[in-house]
Length: 141
Figure 1: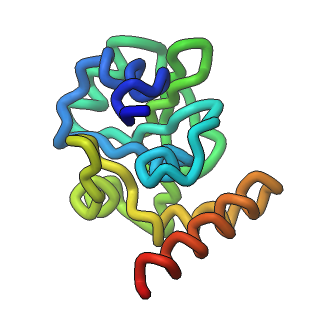
Figure 2: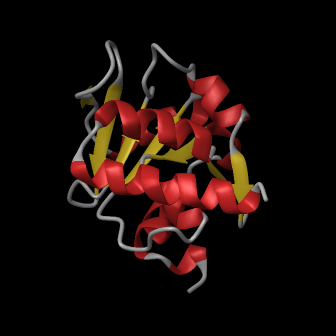
């Protein structure tokens, strides 16, 4: 299946966020690399015009991770737009400007995904870290 045909990616695209002002994080990069297709929600880290657009679409609230990070939940909480992402590790600009572009969309690099999934340490994250490690090992050889 084409990445842009995935239900959650279509939802993100429908928001009209300026493409240079957001990055898809969370498990989204696993979609981009075809490591997982069954993603229950999608996290979008936004700055500037993309964040300004997000706050017109929903009510901002404090995010569960990161001091001062705000979020807007859309589509029955399946799309989460955040003003930051593990701010002790990366700035929003670092995540967006350092993103990998797949099918015209910015995705957080897998090395970063591995870091935050290791920190979160949930059972689904352990599986994702294993998939990332196997993928990165395969492409490096």
